Structure formats: structure tokens, C-alpha cells
Image 1 (cartoon, helix red, strand yellow):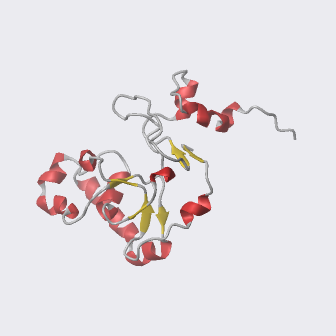
Image 2 (cartoon, helix red, strand yellow):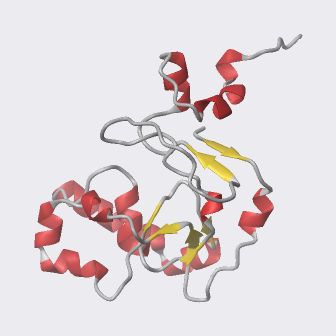
Image 3 (cartoon, rainbow, N blue to C red):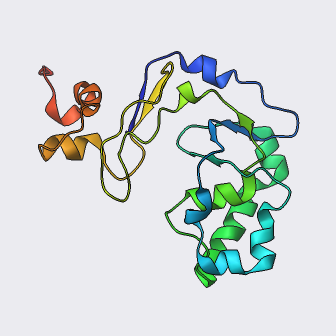
Amino acid sequence: SDLILVDDIAKLAATPLRSNTVLAAPEYCNANFSIYFTPSFWSNPSLSLTFANREACYFNTGVMVIDLQRWRSGEYTTMIREWMELQKRMRIYELGSLPPFLLVFAGRITPVDHRWNQHGLGGDNFRGLCRDLHPGPVSLLHWSGKGKPWARLDGNRACPLDALWAPYDLLKTHFAIEV
């Protein structure tokens, strides 16, 4: 509900995955994803070594291409669940569903052009600031983050890019359906 596709999804689905990867996604190697993990994670060598020998780049799980055969044969659901079980016993990460994916896949994905995830349109998660589009072409708009366009539009505090989402608001239909 927080995505608008403005290109042919078949182009994204046709992304060739490297032979040693299970998924493809836009990567952001200049982002500091260490904030997703707690100090207890980083101070525990057996946990923090998870990222050893990897260029562990951030990626957003909102837009991914997954080879389901490789996923199943590699038992990646089990790996993610194991990190989530550890999280239940001792808090090792913050901010929802992304950290277990980072723990398993960061630095081990096929990169996809950033046009496929113009993410962060939901704004800054700390101060709620509006964001602009990243430079370059756009294939998918993603209101990732806390600020969702429907809430901001309904609250009369919209960001400029929320106007792109407004025509898709099903609660504000501009037509009547006759039965």
C-alpha cells in the first residue's frame, strides 16, 4: 500500500541473480545500518562477527527479487526465524523486520538499480521530515518509513510527493460504482 509502480514489473522480475545469491534488491553501501542493532549485539563477538568478511550494505526489504527455489533449498526461512527467536530471548536489534534479513543477506545479494526503490518517501524516521526523490530515473516510488501518505493527507500535513499517491487513495474515490 505504500508503493507506486511506474514501470513494467516484468523488468524487475527479469533481474538475473548471481549464481551465489538468493535475492536481488537496491543496495545502499553508504548507509549506516549499525543503528538497527543494539549495543549488546555489537559487544558480543559471536554475534557481531556475523558481518565479518562481508561488505554488509543496507537494503530495503520492501522491494526484492527472490529465487524461490534457492530460498527453499537454502532454508533461508529457518535462518531468519532463528535470528527472530534469538531476538525474543535477548534484544539484539531494533526497528522491525529488516534486521533479520540484514543478518542473513547483507553483503550477499545481487544489486538492483536504485530506480526500483525510490525509498524513504515516508520521511525521516526521527524528525518526520519530508524527503525528495533520489537523483536519476524512477521505476517505483516507496513511502518507506513512518510517514505514510494516507495519514499525512488525511491529517492535512502532506509532504509534496504525497500528491503522487493521492489518486490511488481508495477511501477518497472520485467516482461511484453502480450496482
